[in-house]
Image (cartoon, rainbow, N blue to C red; front, side, top):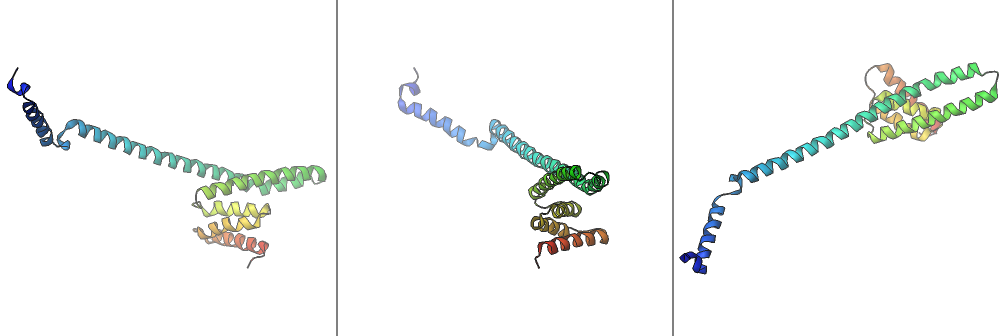
Length: 179
């Protein structure tokens, strides 16, 4: 046995030498710690990018769904005219089909309104105007003002489009009997 092994003080001095060597070697000089830190940074960055992509995809899907609903809502007035001309001689059938069309309009406009709310009103003026107009057509005057207000605030482009939006908004306010 060596002298260091026999004396407890010798053991302490060799362990203190090891700890002194470890202290001298800082954490940023140790490759294993650097690799682990870089891997953690890449992992966190990847998670953030994935979350942002998912949010973007969800918004794009909502915009696409809103676009489809607005197209459907645009076709409802012409469908009403077709129903009235086709079933002019059959008021019972006209009332039944008209009720079904109104129900479809209400479901579509409520879904479109929910999407606009989910997108915090960040939609085109034309889309908000169509939703507001459809709400007026369905007899929902109070909520229509909100979506027509969004349309008015975002109205840009052709003066005719802005004027039409203002007209719809004014009619909704008039029908609501509010100043």
